[in-house]
Length: 64
Image 1 (cartoon, one colour):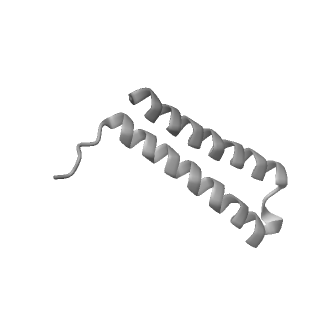
Image 2 (cartoon, one colour):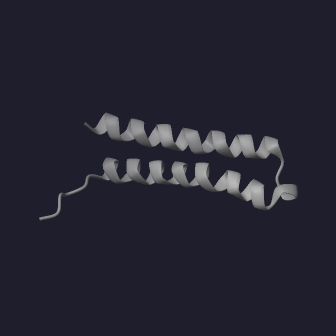
């Protein structure tokens, strides 16, 4: 049978996945649409991605 997932676990997974997607696709956006985004914006978006990733990990660690 499938293991029951708790709300904190699902929230943690969603935050980690969102952070990972931001970290992967933000640089790709700048590479392929270079003139539309500034480097300051990219750094801010990457910071948000890292924050989501860390927060997702913390939510899951707190659950255990």
